[in-house]
Length: 198
Image 1 (spheres, rainbow, N blue to C red):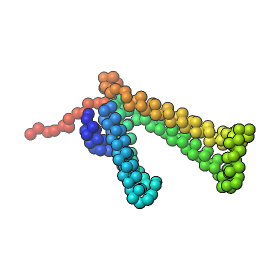
Image 2 (image 1 turned 180 degrees about the horizontal axis):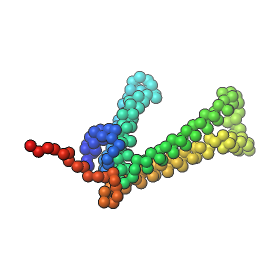
Image 3 (image 1 turned 90 degrees about the vertical axis):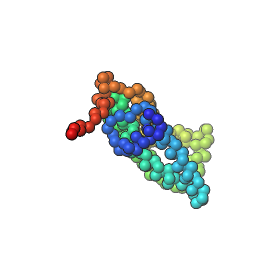
């Protein structure tokens, strides 16, 4: 499948999570989304410069949202093409989301518990100076606080689960097409529709 055909197929199957997508279709779609992201980032930068706004990301955000659903659909169809159910795609994503929620809750809790220190400039400056001092125990105390409040463990878990999910997905994306003869129930040949002669 060529680049243009892959893009056309991706938009024609915008929210189609059934069927299959070949390796070339998936990787061409991935290249297309990267190119769109680069293009929308350039447009955002130009608009941001014109409006004197450094953090203008509206066009990139809209482009990402527009390509999110077909990107998920192509990824699921690629899993089907390699002989895997959509559950194999969703379980690692759900696990990553759950660990991300754990990290966010731990971080927000940590911030609220230490809000008074973070909002007092003098206390914050004294604390940063004490962390920079090699003879101080402040850095160790801070590390202990991060561990005790689950910020550090949840962050490490997020990194590990995210990396595992990324590697798992890449392995599936590069697998060859699995045929029906090899037991792939998703890769059934298309049957021509029945027509009445006459």
